[in-house]
Image 1 (cartoon, rainbow, N blue to C red):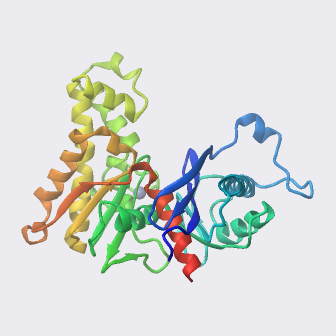
Image 2: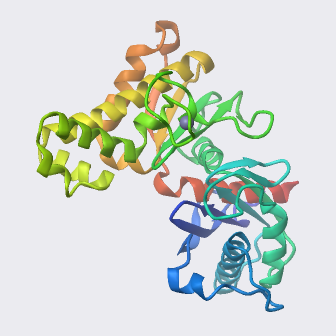
Length: 337
Ligand SMILES: [Zn+2]
């Protein structure tokens, strides 16, 4: 593959979509970012397709992504060789279908590859090979090839944000599992009678370690210490981080506990998979060393001593671009056939 070849990479997240041109060195050449959900007023107007028929929310999202991609390609004056699309949710990469996702109505069961391929042609692009997968897998692909897992044949990559996702590199390859679902790190059980997870089950890692759950933990600790008035302004993970930065003991404790829970879950996975590196990324990485160190220390304290030998626990190197870079690399790979 010519390093100058470019593919369209698409990262479909819960709040925003990044469409970018990615080259064979994993560099982001150009990008546009848009909201996943249209403004309320625009939705009320109901999007229509070329025939005037009202489009479903899923079709509308794909049509907006295709238009953004076509505009990006025109402005950059390049001919992309392929397209990779990574979406939040459960994806069958072989069938090209979203199996489960609450992103927009109709996203569960959506034939994403086929629909995206048609929408890109409708937007004026050539008929390109399209690869689809979930965002955790895309992150793992990018970190393995150009990030913190480079040179490792056995890597466990995890992204902690509003949820906890990930991907495993085993024997140098992304391990997808039977339906492409391998890597649902957030729903591994760390307390089987524990807190209720958004998936409906109890005690999932995500119910303790995701960003919003760290905010919950802060509020719980404040209530326990009868410091009620302090919770009013704390809505987001960034608020808890700012408090910790300012020396707040309770905020620091909540962040450390989130990291400890994450580390405990990752230690179980490390015992099962025996990786040489665990790469931790996602938005919560912004909480800094007090969170990351707690996670790393919990991993090292809990893995078997034989598994710990030579095991590195490191922050993701590609930051919030990892998913879109991985998606672009999927597109380049699909063009290779
Ligand atoms: Zn769960």
